Image: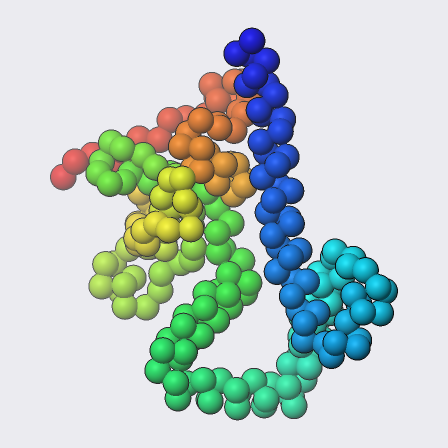
Length: 212
């Protein structure tokens, strides 16, 4: 009976959570329809509520915005908007931080594309991490080493974590995908990606550098 109960939960719980999350996102996007005048809202025109129209409208708004800001006039508008926001203390900090993170993630080919093993919080203990970039400038100059930026997420909430700079020679790159790495972190190691035993046997084990 216990085996059947667990098998049933493994089917319905993920399905239920997926439906809840999608329903929440669709509900939030449907609120964009409130920007339209009452007479032009789909509920008024159709006479009934049709879920999902807000998703289409949100996508259209994002695409149109991208088209506008891609030309010279649009860039001037964005610059003026950012200058205005820069005069508001709290808003300035939040806006600039979020924009910088998004620009880094979307423009950098290395951002969160590699799953790594690093010895953290001390030698001999290994944890999963993600490469977020490559350190250049003062940090590289003063350490005299090839240092990479590493984000170590926490379990079970990978949106928080620690940022550290690690010498490349102290990092082990994995062939694991980012999705598999996130699953392993969120499940606290319960979900482990499959790895062919033959390949595992042929892989050399990483050696720790000798103690000074």
